[in-house]
Structure formats: structure tokens, C-alpha cells
Amino acid sequence: MSRVCAVSGKKPMSGNRRSHSLRATRRKWNVNLQKAHVVVDGKPMTIKISARALKSLKAGKTV
Image (cartoon, rainbow, N blue to C red):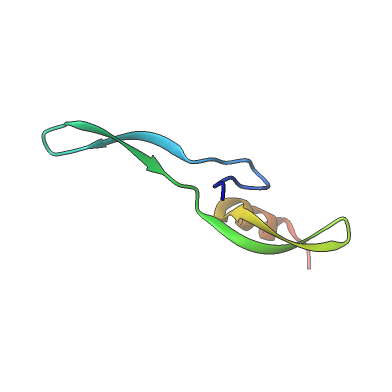
């Protein structure tokens, strides 16, 4: 299962883990993915979307 946001296309980032002595080992930051039910072209779908993109979609909605 890939960790990619269906809306924004965000993917995991990589970098270094730094110990107290500043030794560097590789680490990964995953995207905060959530399952959300959205309507796409009139059909309800379940997609994996990042929390940031979900927040943006909910804010842009007019009720």
C-alpha cells in the first residue's frame, strides 16, 4: 500500500536521524494519511488523503 495522498500527491520525506553525538542514520517521515469518503463525479468513493488536504477541502466547502 503506497503512502501517497490522492489529492495533493504528498509522499514520505527522508532525512537523517541525529543522535546526541551527531551521528547520522537515515529515517523517514510518513504522510498523515486518512481514509475519507468523498463524492467524485457523482459517485461516493473512499480515498487516502492527507490530513492537511482534508482540512483544506472541508474549509472550502459551503454549507
